[in-house]
Amino acid sequence: MPGNDKGYRGYVFSRAVEGHRAPQHIQNLVIRDYAARRKLHYLLSATEYAMPGCYLILEQVLDDLASVDGVILYSMFMLPQEASARQRVYARLLDAGCVLHAAVEGFVLRDEADAERWENVLQTSDICRALEYQEIERWLM
Image (tube, rainbow, N blue to C red; front, side, top):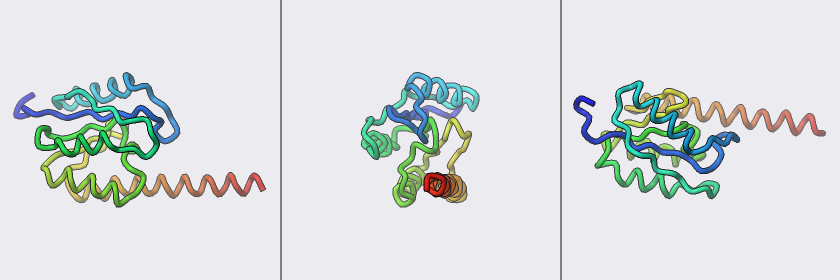
């Protein structure tokens, strides 16, 4: 890959993403295909622990940003649920001059404008999920 001597670290989950469980080998295939189509040098994926709300492996990946060009998430919905925690992830990546990719959604985060776009999608999803739960609660009453 021309001019790309570091590569992109994959990041996969061993727990469900948005209520859907994709086996790790499938997540890795999606990331590998995404990287190949974009001519990105793919590095092996880091796998997050299964405990809900755990992001220890993501923190390790972020601590190692100096040795990579960026990170390819299986899905942007793997990021922490709290907006402030996501903002810290974006800031660390951008401050390190790295790029964040979401393979399933085909999104790329290269700057603050991209971070705002990602947040719009994630927050809209949260609102829709909350509305859905309200409708379910109303239907059950």
